[in-house]
Image (cartoon, rainbow, N blue to C red; front, side, top):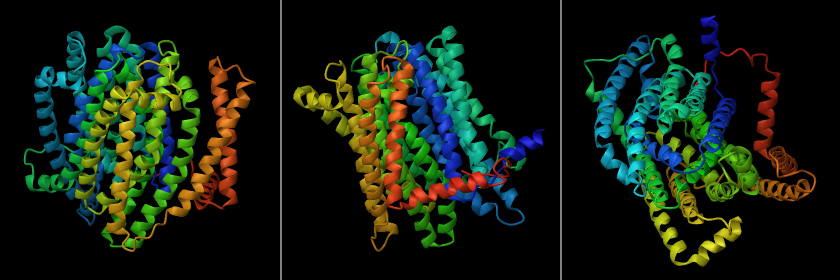
Length: 561
C-alpha cells in the first residue's frame, strides 16, 4: 500500500499546459480551502480587533521567511541541483549540496527567529502603530508563536526542490492544501479554547503538514537532507550570491505590504481585516493562473537557457504569457462585475456585515485591475532567474515596492484633504454611504505599484531577450480583451435579469444570481473567441480533450513544479 501511494505521488509532467492545468487544479483546491478559511474567520470572528491582531501578527514571520528562507528557495536551488544530478555520482553530489544548504538554513533561521522573538515588543509598535497596549501585547505573543512557521515552510520549500527536480508536481501541489487544513483546524477547534493564540497554533500545525507531506517522496529519491557539521561555505556563498538579489526584491515587497498594514492599523478598527480579506480574494486567481503557469514553465526555461536554445526559451515565455492573458482578462471582467456577489457568498456570514461586504468588494475591484500584470510579472521574473540574471528584477521590484508606499501616502493625503476625490471613488465603486472608505487608498496604491512593476520589467525583458523588439502578445491581448469585454457586458445584463427572478436576499439567491450571470457571460465570451479562432482557446480545448481521452489519467508516475 505505501508503495502504491508513493507511485501515485510520483507522476511526471513535462508539458507546460499539462503541468499548469494540474497545478492550477490543485491551486484551485488550495485556494478554495483558503476561501473556506476566510469565510470561517469572517463568520466566527468578523472584522475587528482580534482579526486585526491575527493578520498583523503574520507580518514579521512572513518577512523573516522571505528574508532568509528565500535564499534557499526552489527557484534558486533547482539549477544547482540540475547541474549536480548528472552522471554516475549525481545523487551523491546532490545529497552533499542539499546537506550544506539544509545545515546553513537551520543555523540562520533558528538564530534569526530567536533574535526576533526577543525584540518583538519593540518591533510590534512599528508593525501596528495604531494598536492599543493590550492589542500590542497580544500581537507580540501571537507573532512569537508564529515564528515557528517560517522554519517549517522554509524546510518544505527546500526539499520541494527535489520534488521539482524529479517533476513531482502532484506532491508539491498537496502542500498548500494541507497548510490550509491546519489553519482551519486552528480556527474551528483551537480558537474557541485559546482565542487568537489558537489561530497561531493552527498556523504552526498547517506549516508542519506543509513539510511532512513531501518527506516520504523526497526520502524515496534518497535525497532527504541531513545536518552536516562540515558546511561548505563556499557553496553556500555561491547560492547566496545568486539568490540575494531575488531575496532583497521579495523582502521589499513584504516590507511594502507591512507598511500598508501599519497604515491600516491607524484607520478605522477592522481595516486590517478588510484589507487582508480583499487581498486574499484577489490572490486566488493570481495563485491559480499566474503562479501555475510561471512555475510550470520554470524548469523548461532553465533547461532551454542552459542549452543556449533561445528560440525555445522565448517560445516558452511567450506561450505561457499568452495563456496568462487568456485566463486573467476574462477573470478581471467577471470579478469587477460580480464583486458584491463574490464577497457576499464567500465572506457574508454572521459577523460579516453588508457594509463589510461592500467595502471589501470595492477593494477587490481596485486590486484586480492589476491581476494580469501581477501574473505576468511572476513569469518574466522567472525568466530572468532561469537565465541567472537577478539584478534586473531586484531593481524593478525595489523601485515598485517603494512606489507602492509612496502612492499609499499620496492617495491617503489626497483623500483626506480633497474629500471630493474620495467621493468620486466612492460613487464609482458604489460605497458612498459606507464608513471607512479611506481604506481604499491602500488597494489602489498596491494596484498602481503593480502596474508600474509590470511595465518596467516588460520593457527591460524585451530589451534583454527579444532583441528585435517584436511583440508577439498583441494579437492575443486584443482578442482576449474583446472576449473579456463581452463577458463583462453579458454578465452585467444577466445580473439585472436574474435579480427579477431570484430572491437575492438569500444565500442561494445571490449565489445563483452571480453563478448563472457569470456562465452566460462566459458562453458569449467563448463564442467571440471561437469566431476569431483564438489560438489559446483552441490549445486549451486540445489539452482537455487529450486528458479526457488519455488512458493514463489515473495512473501517475513522477511530477515536477
